[in-house]
Figure (cartoon, rainbow, N blue to C red):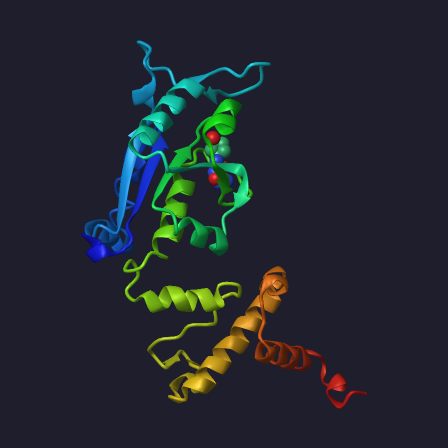
Length: 259
Ligand code: 4FV
């Protein structure tokens, strides 16, 4: 099973387990499940609501619109998982969490068992977070109807970093080189599409020239679209030199002669 490779377990606490049926069966994640590299289990929080009507939400104390998810069913569900594996790391998906990024994804990929708690309505009772949650993660500054889609994003971003999940582990590593920068432009056949051709260097077979072009393009794109990432990137001296070249080339020609 997974030939001794590291395998990872995701326990998803949700009121809508069927939402996970198809998205996780397709393509790379589907194969990773078949290969036993990842195991995904959906746990219906309502199964841990023990009252006759299996109630999982209630009106907010202090009034206000919407409903809040009750603490007891979630507490029982998390304690049930912890009774099987006390080392499980519990995550609550919420707009109030830390913004998911490649660094967080890499950290999570070093763990073996995650619980992903999916909120609904106005969210969960505060005591769930205080008593049962190790980490809160947001996939973006917008409000979803539920945490399920965010949980899928986390599973995808983390699973692809596990050895054996992507075609070749190199792609994840290559990922890692560029991970603090935006990706360089990609091209494939046809060479010429309606008069738009592929940069010659990519067909030169000169791998150092190709790598230099890609690094420069990644730096240019990051400078244009996400200068905040550039500020955080640990740039090599060659990167710095390329960046100066890009800035020089972007300035109107008067500066080229240092006038
Ligand atoms: C969300 C996000 C998100 C908030 C209210 C579920 C919803 C509802 N989760 N990143 N953005 N969650 O919008 O993770 O309970």
